[in-house]
Amino acid sequence: MTTHPYYFVYILYCNNNSYYTGYTHDLEKRYASHVNGTGKCKYTQSFKPVHIAQSWKITGDKACAMRIERYIKKLSRAEKEILIAEPYKLEDIFLF
Image (tube, rainbow, N blue to C red; front, top):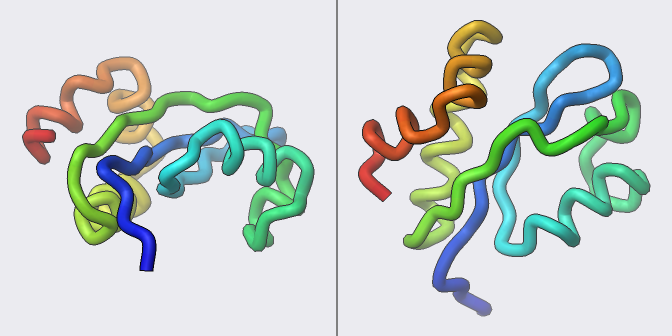
């Protein structure tokens, strides 16, 4: 099993005016897979990403990145837009 020293949690802005949140250890490669439809994400196969709205480098294990991803996914659109505009607010909550 491969472990990584950090992960990225990211929010994509999609072509249907929605946000998609995910995590990965290689942001560029994962974004390309969303754009090209080569990943296993059915949502971004249907609604292509326009750009990365925001991302955070998470030092810690996969479980930490998953916990942050789950937190963001539960937020309202307005709350996500606040995090996008003011990314440090997430850092204040999770202290990473």
